[in-house]
Length: 286
Image (cartoon, rainbow, N blue to C red; front, side, top):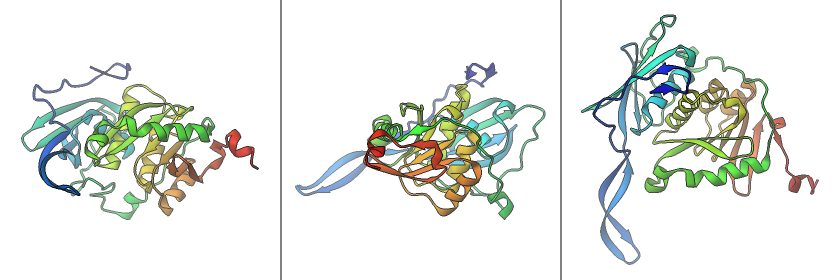
């Protein structure tokens, strides 16, 4: 198996398959017509232990799907190493969870591990110093202009592109859209950071150019989501929910267009609005 046609060999998956990303949980449901026993699909949440050249680094709680994408995306978005420095990823399934060992080339030293595990919704778990949390954000230069209709098209298509989300109503998704808003790669996870890392890893592994489209996420947009988008090289992130103040500041500094509160009837551009061109319906009323 190769990464994105660039000649990188991935370690073969062990014979033991990844756990199912959805489990059936027995429950008792109340409805207006009474109580009944049901089986409800819920997302699996599995410990994924990331290591670099065999040195433990962090444990993420994640949906056990697309683990190689997660490992690649995390490596790049957390600034551990550039994609070009990743030789391969070895994924193994154990009784207590999944391990993903990222093998780096000899020019990159294995990083020091984080001190605690990463919770499902945590983007900075285990970071010990303020300097690590508030590190400089890479800058995205240049990009196509996206029109408002492309944003609407991508947001409208996102719900149908989430099989885990439809079944469980408990996962996040991150998708990559072409300039016209057509969705390409989509990744899902119980954690919003994990979903975005999986998407970034998949884009890099597929030898796709993140600068040629934009990212769409189903979550709020905090500053880590902006940083990850910038590290992957995408010029715009579109979020279904609201951004934080720091996310807007970081987006401006990184040259990332931040669109949030994206719905079928509109959206709000919080940074780098020059990349979003109004459509004909909007200009007709000016």
